[in-house]
Image (cartoon, rainbow, N blue to C red):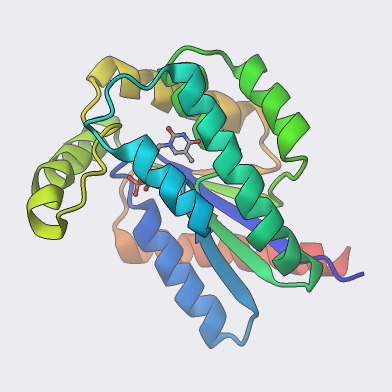
Amino acid sequence: MPRGFFLTFEGLDGSGKSTQLRKLHEWLVRSGEDVVTTRQPGGTQLGDRIRSLLLDSRRTSLDPRAELGLMFSDRAQVIAEVIRPALDRGAIVLCDRYTDSTEAYQGAGRELGSARVLALHHELCGLDPDLTLLLLPDFDASLARARHRNQSAVAVTGKDENRFESLDTAFFRRVYDQYRAIAQREPLRVVAIEGDAGVEAVHRRILSIVEERLNQHRAS
Ligand code: TYD
């Protein structure tokens, strides 16, 4: 049975991840690849409803464990509805955030612990990415970008998705440090792209990593 290639993007809010994912998607489509892009939370009808529960900043009383459960409900649905079928037909799947986000944000940020997150991942997902691109620009610059975006977004889009972006610096420092720990723990799966070389330079770096990994995957 053909088995596609599963690639996830990770990083702090404001790391430039979504821009890089879009550019990679466009490049793969131009190269004639069958490519499916999705995101978490979201990516299915159920997921979009879960997303609005999770990100609405008026929902201040959401318990961290309830938040963790919703992240995995969303993920189980997108795996069943989008990711597995695409991989089974041999497509390349690009996913904006996956379980590393939960380990970083709920495990470290909300201090629920990695072990609990990884146990749920094992029980409910059972699917690991072939490659994870972790964007790690300078911590202060990412945070400043996320906060700036946060202030203008509600006015421009009318969408309130600020529940995470308005959290304090110590929360994001824990998230950032956990991302680094994951990259150290799993150096084969996770490639960290550090620093802020600019959108085009980071895009070229990503292309060379993806081309190499795709060739290896297809030759194996
Ligand atoms: P996203 O829309 O990807 O935001 P951005 O474009 O800034 O990357 O994600 C929304 C927020 O959800 C983001 O602040 C991280 C958070 N999140 C978690 O806390 N845990 C998770 O498992 C996921 C997937 C996202």
